[in-house]
Amino acid sequence: MMRRYFHVQGMATLMMTMMVTFVMVMVSFATFKASLYQMKRAQNFIKLRQSHWRAEGAIECLYAYLQQHTFSAFEQHTRFDKIISDSQCLTSLVSTQLDVSQEPDGRGLIHAKDNAYNISRRFHYGPKVGEGVIVLNAKAHFIGQVEFMPDTLRYPRQSGLFPCVSVRFLDEVKYSQGGRPSAQLLTQQPAVNGPYPQFEGECTSSHRTTLRQHDSTQNPQHGFAKDFVQDLTISPFSSYFLQAKSPSSIRQLKRQFRLVNITNLEQAHQCASIINRLISLGYSRVWVNGHCLIDSPISSYKPISLVVEGGIFAAIGEHEFIGSMFYLIDTTIAQNRTLNEVWKSVRFYPQIKADLSDKTVYFSEGHFAPKGGIYIDALGVEAVFKDIGVFEYRASAHPFERSKVLEWQPGGWFAF
Image 1 (cartoon, helix red, strand yellow):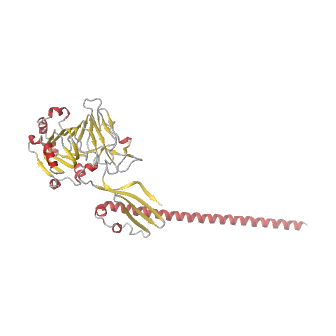
Image 2 (spheres, one colour):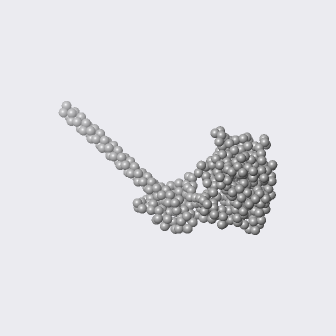
Image 3 (spheres, rainbow, N blue to C red):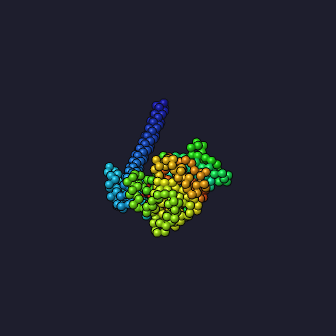
């Protein structure tokens, strides 16, 4: 009886051991299977990330190449498959494919595929925007009631709200009310279709200036908003003419203009009638050498380019100026104290003398606000703008073709 008891007990122990062993084996197998699954999953993830990195790297490589070869890629209409081949972005990427497509409006897409991974990024190729309504390396003094319907960057910070640019400057911008307590310097909303075709939007609150008291950008606590942009690399000449400033480039540019040489102040006071006559004769580019003093209306109903070089410039009164203006004066001439004597000989000097300083070379009062923008290359001296009313910026009023740039569209990555 005792032997049978021990025999049954042994069998139970053996079966228990076998069951435990079986369970352990099954658990181990399940764990091993799970480990294999995790390893396979990790391996697939790594392969996917490698495909992502190769595809993204190929897009960035091609974009960098397009930036260096924009003229051949976009202006000479070279086939994009040749551009891709010449870029050598796929030399060591056997599994990666690249493709570029572009719409007539400048929008385009770079698409990359690597194994099963697809990724695209949008870009825009077209005229540069966001330089500003006024671009100058001179000091700027705004007096009285002055308003801007500004330029903007191409893409909004958030839906319908854009970083606006009223003035791009190098040195200092200051504002004073000119004895009018109600006067203000104000940034309005941009014009519809103003900065570029099909534009419609508003400025972000951080890019809208409202000043009702004297202020200066040199004051650390100044009230100018971000639409007044200090740019230490600014070059008004290059921005306007799309080439570096040099004596030879100026000579070559003058060949594209109707030249007017002003040799005395009597002629300088006829500047408006001279410009109007040339506009009526069909000239769209006028280059004035010498002083230019305007006290009668200038009217242009198509985009013109007015350049004034080498003398003081003053404009008062109401004008309808569809075009742009470039003002250029050599620094050594601009700092010549005899210019103060020239100002005193201006017919309307008593009307403006209170607003001039010993560094003023450019003065406008009333509605002299070319819609295509004002560019001033007058380093170290001053430009004064008084009671202008509204600077309404319209890129279409600028008669020169703008420089073209290649830009990523913010948030333009698309993976699928």
